[in-house]
Image (tube, rainbow, N blue to C red; front, side, top):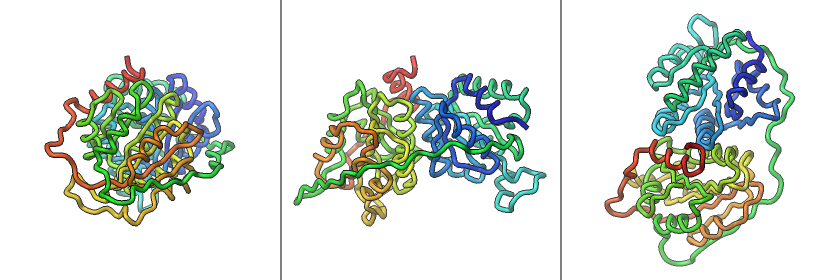
Length: 383
């Protein structure tokens, strides 16, 4: 058994200071230690996939990050592990508990996942080993993990068994509730059809100077149309990990408060991981702008309807702590939202757009890892 402090300090010596996670009883001493330390960042995520995506965004922003989770929730992280960190080459240290480990008595809901946790990591091409249970093992384990992440730019996992870390009393607090009213505003054109996605994206490009802004586009036609309009080094086109664009943007915005991070979300993607609205509202600063392009359908898969028509996304953003929550079908919403002075809380806008896309829509010529490398060189986190 080790003290949580021993691992945290060894990790800090290697530059690791950004933690995200979803609690587990096995992890409690470790998470409590991180929360208790004012020199560390801890983001309490709504689910394990969001935790991983937020850690990945922080890593892109130059912070060495850890995502912590129970193995019963590892399934929530499969999508970002296979289509975000693997595809874009983003190193994140995973600390995953091993509930239901073979030969260890546990609750019945952990039996199957306990048996397949190691093979699941193997299948996802994530190397893993046991979390260190003795002080002398900490440095070698961290050394192997960090060497892999540097050489391969991919995640490395540590499996924590019960009783590995001594108890730690929680004395720190979570994020304070956001105070202050949320500005609600409606931008309605009145008559005529909804604007095309391209019309909205053209305004995004005009309002996001490449020298101090990063634009993260959700998967599907949004990223492809943004690329077709203008491919800039401050763009990142997420090609997978549907729903994770906003959680990824949160990590990047927290790691780089000097940048204006603009995330282009979709109604289907936002619905998939709506819990991240609360996480953004609790942790994000005024350098994050969340723009949701809502056309009411899953466009790139054939136009099947989403349930967004009955959802008041702006009210949800307001309830979650955003400073601004606007909505409407007038493209001038985009101009005003991007020009709004940054405060201490994030901004949100939902703009209704028409379904459909342009003919012969291209895909980015660069591979995803090349697009990310270009972005990181642009913002100075890779030389």
